[in-house]
Every structure is written in C-alpha cells, then in structure tokens.
Image 1 (tube, rainbow, N blue to C red):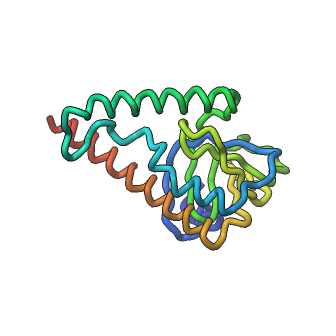
Image 2: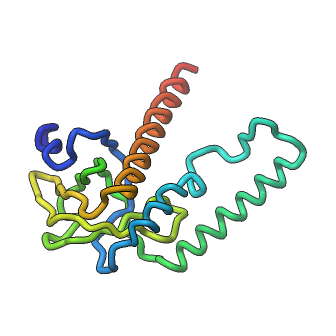
Length: 178
C-alpha cells in the first residue's frame, strides 16, 4: 500500500514501523487512566536499554545488575504464567490515529485489540478499534476512544519507539564502520 493509503488511516502524525504482540481481544477495553499509566511506565520494563550503564558505576554496580536480572526473570515468569498464549509479534506501522497490520491478523468484525507494550509487561492494553479494512496484504484500522491524556501518552510512546529505531540504525552504521 502506498503512503497516501496509509495516511488515510494513520493521519499525518509521526508513525513508526515496529514489531508488536497484538491480536484481537474479547476483554473489555483497558481503563484509559490505567492504560496511560502503563504506557508512561514502559521505561521501567524497557528491555532494550543496556543494564549496568550507570554514569557512576561503583562497587555496588554488580549487585544492582544482579538484582535487575532477578527482577527481569521474575517479570518474565509472571508474564508467562499470567498470559502464556500471547500473540506472536507482527510487523506493524503505528501512529496516534491507528495501525497497519499484515492482512489476516485481526478478524473482519474485530472491535478491540490487545497490545503487549513490552515482552516483560504481562498486562496488555486493550484498545477499541474501528472495523479493520483490508487492502492488498495489509489490514488498517483506527483507534477508538484514545483521545485526551491517553492519546497523548500513545503519541509519546510512538515517539520513544521512533527514537529507539533511529538509535538502533545509528548503532548498526557505527558498528559497520569499525
């Protein structure tokens, strides 16, 4: 699908291509205040930043690293026990207005999706969506009921994903120069 077709669903806001665990949901939508808090707390569960890269590492740093690894393991075990059948990650394009997924990811009558914001966070956010539209090999849908503070939190999350994507690309370029 071309950019113009995606603009119709995603708006002209910032968008990012990423892999997300996302799928249809029969659960009620997540309370907007809880969803906003989960999104704003993602840095606590962010598994992409390097552990132990403290500005002033001291002799306690190995102990802190060990504690962080234990916490990561505990979160992983809790996540697996609570929701062992999470959806597989799929390549998506996401914006504050909606999402583009591979065709067939959602049923035609889908009105809610659960999005796992982090592989370590066992609680998905369930968002309302418009009935998906399929074009070519893609499904497109818009968010429903994600305005106000929740919409702003989603926008900040997308910005962080975008920033992380740029940083990863820079690391690959810097790594290939060495």
